[in-house]
Amino acid sequence: MSKKIRFNFKSLLIIVVLILIVFRTPFKHQNLPYLILKSLYVVYFESKVFDNPTYQSDTGIFNDVNLVNNNNNKLYVVIIGESTTRKNMSLYGYGRKTNPLLSKQNGLRVFKNVISPHAGTTASLTKALSLDNYENSSKEKGSIIQLLNAANFETYWISNQQPVGFAETDITKLVYSCNNKFYLNTEDTEELNLYDNVIFDKIDYVINNNSDRNKVLFIHLKGTHFYYENKYPDSFNTFKDKPKTQIAINESEYKFINEYDNAVTYNDFIVNTVIDKIKRKRSESFVLYFSDHGEEVYHTIKFAGHNDDVGTLPMFEIPFILWESKDYKLKNNIKIELNRPYMTDDLFHSIADLCGIDNKYVDLERSIFSKSFKNRKRVILNNKDYDSLLKIENTKN
Ligand SMILES: [Zn+2]
Image: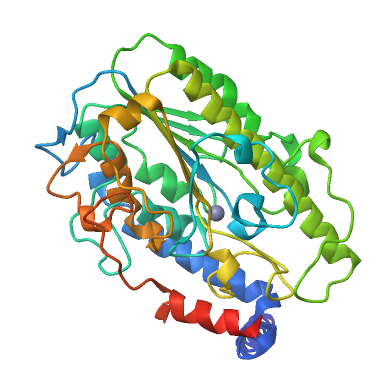
């Protein structure tokens, strides 16, 4: 018995030492056990942070919330994408036509220089949707949903992601105060082939119900997450030839790129369809689309996926796109500068600004849509300046 225990302890020790050794080498990108252990730690840590009961109440710390205009025809939409790097979008200059529909959408504002604070869902979105940001893990906790509730918006969360899971549970806790939550996917999507078009019926239902309150819809997509081939129906299986790449790749690797590009094209269809639905309502509306983080798909290294430990720039370089209705433009006065450098850990302030909310917690210097916007250093990967990393990357090409 004791011999068996000694053996198990020794085996465990050998495994841990091997993991640590591999982590010290360039092979850490392929070190799955290390990445799993690290992810478990991050999920545990984040779940402790977001156990704060503040997120459970409807309006949290927010009171004295005012709206810039008192129109009662507001229908606002925030679409949260998943694992989509702008590097594979033709709207951002990618060689393949992966945005055939959005590129025909009139008046779309395509922001060119927005990054996510992390390369993982939980770490990114818990910052994007709350007062937390990179510089200060805010002492006073509050979510954008609670602020919108306090401004008397009817809030909706429509998700094609599972409510409970490795990267999902903390987001569910964070948006707990949402008035209406629809989790359309409670099974393993990989087996169900539940594509993102599952959201359409629910959106129709929500935008056509007779509530005369102002509404904000958050839509959380499956987007272009690995495994890419399971994120789009057969009719979107269009890219089959060998793509152009900066690094040499083999046949199975370029198959991944083709599948990713098919998923990006399907995502184009999803986002464009949501915009068309909102457009038809002729309300005071905007649709904001961004991705939680990006994805490396053989752009800079031989790797497909996203992870802060691998941490390549395409994992942070995200699409950030705004559509506004005619009525919205008439009644709101936001400032559009498409080249502003922005990181979405401050998204709380941008969404509040877009929704015309005036409150002491809303800092317009942190809103990409404000004339008061201030440029700040964008720190990623613990302590690195994104813009310096970008300069180094650009000199390589
Ligand atoms: Zn994600």
